[in-house]
Structure formats: structure tokens, C-alpha cells
Length: 270
Image (cartoon, rainbow, N blue to C red):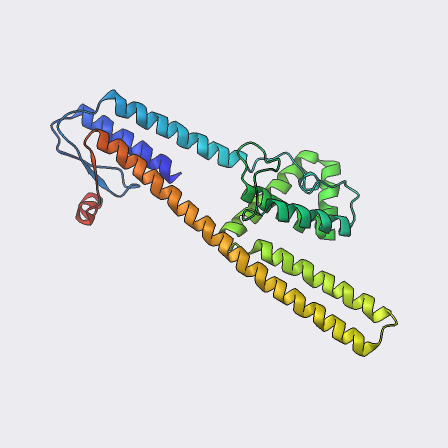
């Protein structure tokens, strides 16, 4: 959205320059927080066409990002499950899809929706798993879906957006979900062993060995996910820099120059 404001401000600046050629400098709106040095000659139609195309592309990108979250798929469809799937089936589907659509390993061979990214699908998979693996949440969703499917669909999308926001803010949702899953599996394993006829000492050693392996795997997963988040942040930063370069290029075509002088910004705000 900041890109749209920058484009809008640029259009306003060019229009002002065309209307009043006697002004040497043009004041900008506060959102951009910068000023431009404008030459005497008015901008040509070429720049307006270029800016309009750039603005249209930005609108398309924003629309695509929004559409990638506006999915009609239910949590069951997201995990490719039937509505009577049991807990083990849910876990199996989650592991398979989360591994396939993980942003760090996705190879582009999946069935993403138009405008959807691997990261968006990955978060939906996480959200679907967290909803269906929780008996109370699942029963509440199924009951709501039976009474009012549209309301249930809206509640599901709100849940997905909540998980997306958590992913953007913390980035540890995948690891947290995995840790919760591992904890439950270890608890069930301990209960099964307690009811078996295995020697107590051997049982203790086996359980300790499995717990150690689980913690090592958790540490590896955490490190890997941290690298994925760093890569995501770098790519976002690069996209912002490319956007600024494109605006500067359009300005340069008409001899306009982006002024980064802090004094000018202060004077303008006054």
C-alpha cells in the first residue's frame, strides 16, 4: 500500500509541475516525507503513461496478494481430507503437505491457486492442522458448518488470517505447531509403554532415547525455519528497493530528482 501512496504522490507532483511551471520546487504530501526538484519544462505524456502502468501493476499485485487469501477451500479440503478423518490421518496429511509446500523446499510442482504463494499455502496448512487437531475447535467448526456454511467459512478465513498475522509477526508458528504435535505423540507413547509388559528400566532408556532424538530434531527444525524467515525478510527488502529504483527511474526520464535532504523534510512539515 505504501507503493500506491508513493505512485499517487508522484502523479500529484507531475500534475502540479505541469500546471505551474513558474514554481521551482513543489511541495509533496506528508506520506512520502521527501521533496522533488522540478525543472522548468513540464513532464511529457510518456511519464504519465509509465506511471499509470506502474500504478496499475501495483494494484494488480495488491489484488493478487488479497486473492491468495480469499480461498473457498475448507480446512478439510486444505489438508485433502474427508470429514470423518481421524487424528492419525490428519497428522499424516499435515506432515505430507507441510513438507511439500514448505517455502524453503517447494519446487513449483504443486497445485497453487492463482496468485497464491507457497508461503500462503504453507500457513493455510498450518491453520487447518491446528483447527482440526483440536477436538473442541473441530466440533465447533463442523457444527457451525452444518447450521450456517457461509458463517463457518467466514470464521475459517478469519482463523487463517489470524495465523498469517502471527506468522508475519513471530514466524515461529510452524515450529510451535510441530513442537505441540511432538509433545502429544510423546505423551501417547509414554502411556502405551506404561501399559506394556516391557522391563521398566528398558522402558525408561527407550523413552529417554526417543525424547533426545525428538529434541535434536526440534533444534534442527528451528534453525532451518529461522533461515527461511531471514530469506523471506531479505526478499521483501529487495522488493522494496526495486520499487524505489523504478520510481527513481521514472523521475529521471523527465529530469526529476528525488531529494533526500532532511532539512527540506523538516521545513515542509513545518
